[in-house]
Length: 402
Image 1 (cartoon, rainbow, N blue to C red):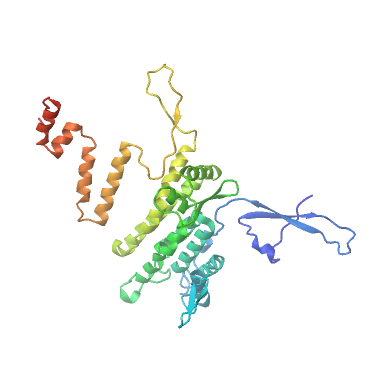
Image 2 (cartoon, one colour):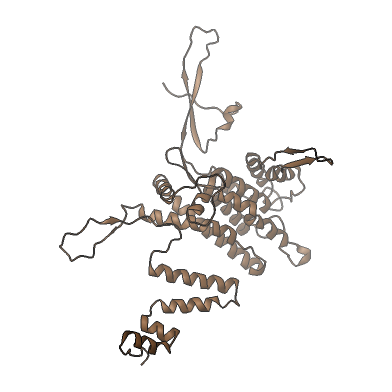
């Protein structure tokens, strides 16, 4: 029996998003004896992609009329409703003066469905970074890291295409002061946004389960598990990432793209307003780093079986069966090169954040020692100690510098 065409506009049917699923109605249980001649229907949905269903190009189209970014809607009723929906309702406590008791009213979290709906509508009327940040957070909540990628693409596009006119406007009366605009973008690294990203899913599937950013941080030892929560094991996290890459080949590209988008926005702001007035994206980058590291490693292993560790025996001789290399833990150091690279990164970080710190000098010396033998170390650390070492071993050492 051929499916009947699906018509929208019937209330409950509007809940189906045609960009995410394709739906058909199939008649069943036909009752020809009923006078009405009605038949019942069942809905069959084919999910075509788990990613974000958005129209990014439409959000980046200039608004009709002048200016190209539309009016400032800061005091518009819909804008205020958006702020209210994104804030939620805090928990309230009422106590009596005589201490007889306390009445507690549970708080209500943000209404993300409403936030997304209002944000999308407002972006058709005005190009506003505040609205885009609200929408980004709503997308992260509903669509995980894929939503974060879409939100960052939106913000990057608004800044690149509409720098002169996007809201909040530069203060023309104060030498194009960007403070209000920067404050709007600072919502990307606010504690609430970082928390939303931590709870965002990386992999979500009925077959393999759900993995959130928080799970990766806990497995990497970067974050303590929530009270009462049972953390995933390292093998579980690696298994979910690997399975997720198997189901979605674009996962690794999307995760890698997050860092590129953040760097692109940072570069654009530095060029426009100077690095001193820009935004420090480190809170967000720090949360995303172990995810990118793990996804890239799993993506590298996805092309075949785990690489075996070859036996050091002579060629042609029978040796023990190759042992599969265990999956590396995110952030784990597995080689001498990893040690040197980590020391390099530590030195670079301290040079940027603590220019007066003596620690980088000590770390650089440690790097130098990595390639020294025992005598070279003794000569570098305690030249006078060579004589004592000669007495202990009963032999004379040649000075490595002679």
